Figure 1 (cartoon, rainbow, N blue to C red):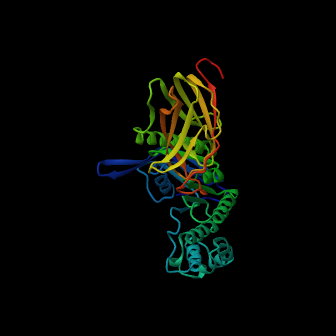
Figure 2: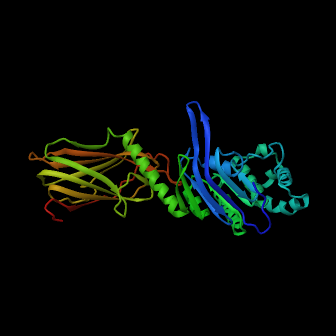
Length: 400
């Protein structure tokens, strides 16, 4: 790791970096031919699923691991935070840790005296600054560790998933401090599972899978592509898990629900949603014998069997005309208000037969996943009924 000469720009350059670990069955390749260059003032994000190789790559850049092959060129002094709280002396007070950490990083006592008040204010842990670190909560250790690292003015700061620790106010302060460091020509490298943090903090980003770089570009473009990939994989895994539940069932010959999908405002069909998004259910009914008084029931049921929503089109004020042939409908649900969970959604077609009975003719079942937002219930006991609007969009004759 090279020392930086005055006015010589800092950088991290990796070329064809490979990291192999021996395992019982042979060798696992954690990092596979990664090449990239990070220069002065860049805020660089690294994202990917667990096991993608992100932390191993950070450890190589920080000098904690030596790569199996490839070239690493680092100009500038590196400080890394792989786990907040690691490195603190548990039996010492927070204030004592400030002095020990500063001296280990080449600061004189006079330098530390000048910085002490600023560090104490930033950490904002009150009287605990003079208590042993072993009495601290995880959030308090996070505050102190981050304050110590950033106030010694690191040239290259490597952080592995730390901004998610601590409260929102700490996150804002940490973000501002990291921006200040970058404005003074520092390099920040951040690994996080929080896409908003990556987009907010980083100018560039790489997405890793199986030790390789899948995409390298602006933080917005890369995080959007990554989230879309995660959504598709989640959908595939969910459909495979619940494949026996999914699909159509017919109870009377000549009647069927051929297709059901959940679409967003752009008309894109999805199975993974957030609870604050607006959802439209689109389905296609096949009716060989005319139905003069059709009706639909839409229900959402948790996988444990608890029904959280059940709505009938006619009961909710929808006046449906007689239908025949292949007919496409839409039901506008508005914004979802579900807790984070997986839900079985069943749409049922009912109609009047010649005897005047209200018969179940056909059903279609699908499974969707709702991602839990920060301010939503984990497992709601009920769902307030929504106003369902059902509209016949088209039929096989082309009529509206």
